[in-house]
Image (cartoon, rainbow, N blue to C red):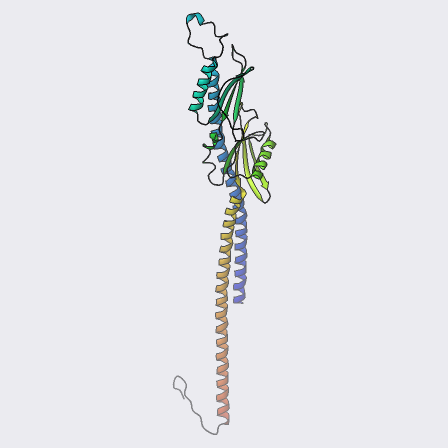
Length: 323
């Protein structure tokens, strides 16, 4: 009965431990998912703030280009009222555009045009590469409507977001129509297509923050997208997207689960081994006691038979030397 009770207690203990591990594994899964989501949202918020600051610098550049046309030339008193009819000095504007482009190495091109055509330009953009083009048409007194276009190199935001692309988190900037401004690093063509489809599904009037997942066969990407106002981009507001493969969270969860399962197996093996050793020791003691009892019975029987049938007197002494 003692041995059976030990085995019952052992089985119940292992079952309770397994139930605790199962609950812990489920809670661990949801905690890891929530922690990764908080990390993605935080990274996305930082990236969006970087984009907003860079858009502010782009606005300052556009204002500087327009100022080349609106600023008055140095002239005598007799020309003080001739600003409205003053023509644009294309050479003067081109020189200043070149100086602005040189002072901003991440600016690919600067151009100024009116209804009749280009007035001045500096630099050129490679249409096959990723880049953002900001364009603004303004009504300037004394001139026809002027269009200022500013093209950014692909490295404009990439240099600032290299920290976000370290590890498994990946940050990219797209327009609301899916035009890539800065693509994800290490991103496959299928992943980029899925991201573009998700961005187009947001719509320009969607919520500022969108949390979703992209399923690519057996692989899934956790995705956080945020709209950032960019009034001078023809394709609408910019979308700052931050993604991380679900495999990273699942890998951590699997490793934690494996550790707990191995711990349960070790506990089960050790406790079962201890009980088996104890049961074997008890069995050996019982067998030894049974053999000793049989030996005593055989000795007593032999002595009894000998004393009853032998024609002699038999005397013997016990351990206390009693006859």
